[in-house]
Structure formats: structure tokens, C-alpha cells
Length: 317
Image (cartoon, helix red, strand yellow):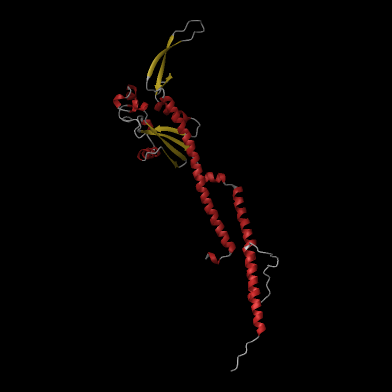
């Protein structure tokens, strides 16, 4: 059915199909770019969290002053009091220091970030959590299963209006002090978290993941933010330019050539428009017009020869 339609209609349909295909290709390309950008943001967050944990781990644990809200060790010390305004000499006053291991320090950092205005949030979780507050959610359960079964270093997915990213963590030698055999774990760890969960790991085992979440727009919202009135206007202008070209450079010359050929077939005068053409044109329509003109000349010459001979008389024997 398409072959029977005019060239203008065929070209319009082909042009629209081409625009749709190119648009689909750009959609896939831009979608990959957008996801790649979100992934790089999540990787940066995970890098910073990992670096912070490494900094704490190089000291085994860090000690903070006068913070007993969450700790794994208590160290009472004394410090000299400053001299009072009345001139009395200061004595010694007790000061309490509390220890934080890498996992606890990272968890408290995540709580601070979650309360901040930062759009990117993170947490630490595992398939065998020591602290019940670190239980994995649905995405994290899938991520933990994938990284363990398929030995992945990372896992990510778009979930609704969020980009979720998980980076695999492996137990180092320093981690086994707390997460190895329960009987060998520090007393403060066993006292705080019990001995049921978070133990029996070996060096190199998958410890868990750094789970990062970043807000993500629907790609249609992103695309609408990129494609505006000007872009749509340029696409429409390209379509109009192409249609004008087809109309005046293809359809009109073909219509004129068809009419001239029709006149030739009826023995009427016909102007093929080849008088102004000199030499060999690369335009296919010009070549067709010149070939038709040569065909007309050949037919006229043949007709003249037939006419000059006159009717053939039958021979008498």
C-alpha cells in the first residue's frame, strides 16, 4: 500500500519513522548517561565512607571524650582543672573517654549524614548483622545475595524515585577481632551485642555492603528538562526543510517529466526542460529527462524513415 502513495507521503512517513528510531536511540543513550552519572555519585559516597572506615581501622578504634551514648569501651582519666577566677588552684577532675570501632564510627557518621541536608544517604548492613538496627531492607537483601552468589564488587538498581547502590565490603584481619569466634571477641562487644549474630567470619569473607541511596528523577522528567520548545522547533524545521526539498527537487520535476512523456506518447509537442542542460549532469532526474529526450528523437527518426519509404507494394510473380 505504501508504494501506491505519493513520494511526499512516503517521505513524510519514512522521516517520521526515522525520527522515532533516532529518538529511541537517544533515549537509550541519555538513560545510560543519566544512570552512569548517578552511579559515579554513589561511588564517590562509598569511597568517602570506605576511606573513613580505613582511617579508624588503622588505629584499631578511636576514643571520644564525654560521649557515652554509643561505645565499645570506657576509659576513665583525669585532667587538671583550670585556675578559678578567685585565684584558687585547680585540682584534678575525672574525664571519661569512650571507644568507637570502625563499624560503629561509620554507623554514627551515617546517622549524622541522614540528619543533614545532603541528598545522598548511606548505611552499613550485612547478611549477618551484629546490631539489629542494621538489618537490610529489600534492596539490600537482593544486593547481599547477588554479591555473595556471583562474587560481585558492586550492585545497583533504580527503585522508584531512588538510585540504590551497594559496594561489597570484605573482612580484614583487624575485623576478625570482633567478628571472628564469639569466645574471642572483646568483652564489651559480647556484652553489648550478645554472641548470636555477627560472628564466625574469616578474613576475606564478604562482611556486607555500603548501601548508598541517591534521589533520582523519572527519566521522562529529565528528558523534558532537556528537550524544550527550541529543540522541538528545530526538529519541526528540519522536517519542513526536507519536505520542501522533496517537493521542489523531486516531486515537481517528476510531475513535469511525467506530463511531457504523456504528450510524447500521444504525438504532441513536449518540453522536457533539457535545453538548458549542458554536458553531463549528476542529477538523476536530469539524466532521466535527457534519456527520455533521446528516446523521443530516436522514435521520431524511426517514424520519419518509415514514412519516407511509403507503403510496401506486394510483388507479382
